[in-house]
Length: 83
Length: 248
Ligand SMILES: Nc1nc2c(ncn2[C@@H]2O[C@H](COP(=O)(O)OP(=O)(O)OP(=O)(O)O)[C@@H](O)[C@H]2O)c(=O)[nH]1
Ligand SMILES: [Mg+2]
Image 1: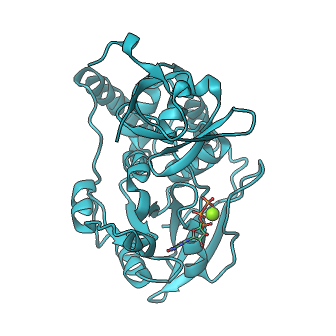
Image 2: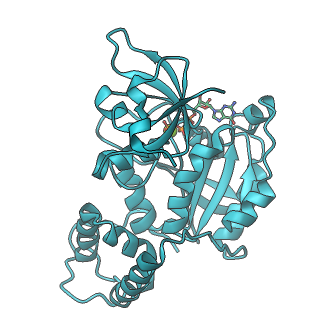
């Protein structure tokens, strides 16, 4: 198990990279919504591309493309993995 | 004549409306539900001369009621109690679909799962063991392709057998941590004493423990407007309800 200080956030992952989610650091309704969309610890998210202004960014998660805003992707902790 | 009600539930874009159209011969929009007003499209068809009413619910990723769509779908399943909730899953993305499937299995025993877009799944080289999935989830699992009208006979046949009680299901129920289970069981018992057998007491207990205040409000509302609510005390106002999709 990794210490949280070793983790980065999904927001910092670059397009084309795959990101392993380890911790969803949110409370309440927003957490539930992100979990329901498939951003669960253990899942691998592929960073697709940012919209022209850089936010939101689209991700492939559990087979579907979902766009997240910076405020959301900054709360998803984990690490970039090679595949 | 006996008429059964079947609700179509599932993630967005899994082909619910396509299936609805294929079964009823109607032309419900296939695409996303837009706007705030969520209408429940319903239509009829006959199978072996038995009339079946099909209700097309909005597609959702969850039924925890984060949105109006989810609330509509959830309330229909729990409070209108269709004879069968037909879960339409996308066979090409089962991982995503199973989140919703587990939630629905918690809400009602009368669930039939169909794996739609089997043609796509085959194209992608996916092999799905429907029998095993059915064993694990405790409900029938039928592979179909709504757009190509494949598997619809088996589906209708199974639907009818579930409606008439010939097929009994034993849905997989999530188990929680021991201390939570203890609380669920206690609350479940109290709730079923108050509400009678018509409400899914275990599911309600879990939602209560989660502090789902919107659901509690919806339940109160339902009880207030529902005279025949299985031994519920309190006043009975006959206002408001003009016998919706009630059958059986
Ligand atoms: N290949 C294939 N495509 C299908 C099948 N069933 C539906 N589709 C397509 O999937 C898309 C979505 O279908 P809909 O019926 O609108 O899906 P829905 O579940 O009603 O969507 P929402 O109402 O937004 O939740 C459409 O483009 C359909 O043509 C199928 O069996 N095979
Ligand atoms: Mg639809």
